[in-house]
Amino acid sequence: MRYLFSSVFPLFTDSLIDGIGFEWTMTACAIFFILLAPVPWLLQKFGAALRDRSQYARQVSTETQRGQQLKKDRDGWSDPSTPQAPV
Image (cartoon, rainbow, N blue to C red; front, side, top):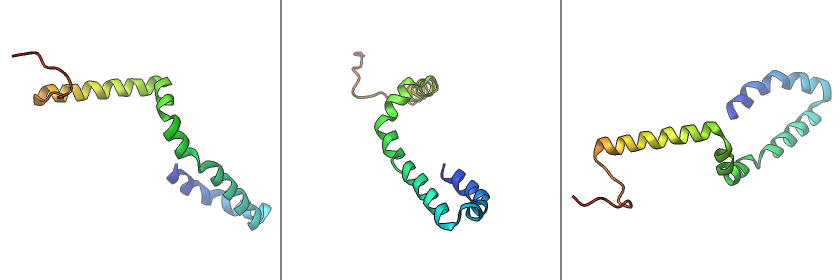
């Protein structure tokens, strides 16, 4: 998002300043960015619930867990919190 804003912002800034003036342009930009400020905290708070409802996130999570399990099996590493069958 940061790079998107920084690449698009110069495209409309000059025409906006010419149209409504410098003060109103900066006020509009400030309001826009103030409205976006809580987004990181909202995503931190509600992100898990959003990922739970997303079919894409579930698929990625399943693939990640499968990959981690394959790596553990390949390396001979097992999680100490899981009980092991006696040898």
